[in-house]
Length: 305
Image (tube, rainbow, N blue to C red; front, side):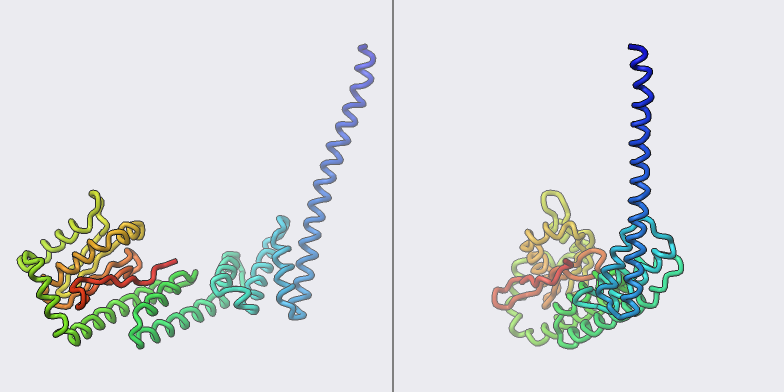
């Protein structure tokens, strides 16, 4: 028995050693094949780029990019060429946002040539958004102007300074529009405003601080405030609302209509209330007086998707 085990054991070790050796050779061979596939795809992409076949070049670049055996130089070349092909092909195959994301990723690699493309894309999207916003504002279409800002905000390279300036312009335009409307509708609104004064006689006695506290109490549900900040003007209120609170606001718009009614009684004017999404400077809702119902109506503004 001992002789049997001593004779068989070396043979088992040799067979096990052969299996491990074969496995190692297989791994090396697979890695070599993978690198070969990447090199083949990259070579094909280079030829297709020279021939102007951008679609096929992009397909081979994506195939080459999946390899784990790429040098830093090859990574940079592939990412720059992906940026170039997507930029040249353009929409609808590749949206501006997709192009910006691809090219932005390419610029993270040292020595990338994609920076000028990113600059062009950012300027192109800024100019388009600025033109749409200006056109909507000129037409008095505040909803479309608001949507132009929201759409631009979703662009990866959005200029935050431009967004802030457009939001400020939109706010001023909305105030002007309400003020003009108030002058045109003064006679029509007089009975509605008088009705508000009778409904909320105590509002005239409140100063701004007391009225702001009254607003906060009326914008609270089950002990949870829906509003994070209150700004009281002569004929307008701005309420800042966190995005997470928008659902609660939506289900309690009657409370905000009551707040606007009270503000109208306080100023004896065609006042309005803006409910802004905190951090964006954009209104989620606007409330104004309806002369027919003699109550505040809610105007729903476009929301970020």
